[in-house]
Length: 381
Image (cartoon, rainbow, N blue to C red):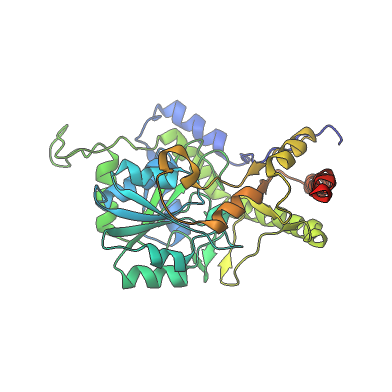
């Protein structure tokens, strides 16, 4: 313990962010019109390899907008992994539809395609898939299932900009994909989101609903209920600067993951390291480990690391554990085990090898200490 403080996530703002934001201020184009919005959309769509991108004010509204544009409503069921950030599920609820939870597979932590098939009913309209922490889902299985059952797939790719499956970028699979640009994501706009798709009609519908569904033929006339989900020009300006350096942002995360792999490799008796499917490219939004000793209380490890100046975070709690969704029925053993034993380590572009070595050493020491602390209890039992 040397007095340092290592954050779990931190944005890297080392490009033209300041210049572009000042340009917005000088021009007074600070709201939801201005040159940076379309430029940012074009940069993201080109990066993902799809023709259409629709910017929103955050990642949650991007998911809701996608579902609304697809006509999801009361009486519909949408399948979604329980091991995800709650926004993936709340967006389904916003539409008046019913989220149907599916378990995860280990070690990818993404949705289990076998469990998904078992959850399909005549009311199922589609799937919200989640490439958790930046690891792509099994698109071979997911694409086959969606085609066989005529289901849409909205990919909540908030954490997966830059990931790919079979050399195709995440964002180019499924019906559409959504991204988040919160301050801790692969790139940031402060707050922001995006929907990308290769469907021109869907893109037009997304744009209509995003801007209060204002009629293109009649000023201040609205034929239906829309939403105010527009991104500001200031946010898009930051996004443009971030996208100019997207390759550098991604390379830094790969380097951090490589350091963790090297430094933790010999202690896989203590924890399971991220395992990448041979068909997938992991973008490592988070480097997440799973403790093998289930007697250890995960939150005790997190608290101990915090005392050593290391901020970590638990792997998401399964959404079916939470009060709004506790009436959901089903068995999700993999998701529950991953959540109970999983920790996400500091993962961002400002980390040095020395920082990562400190985290790795303190993590190993903490888990060993926790094991020793529980040994008398085990012997007594």
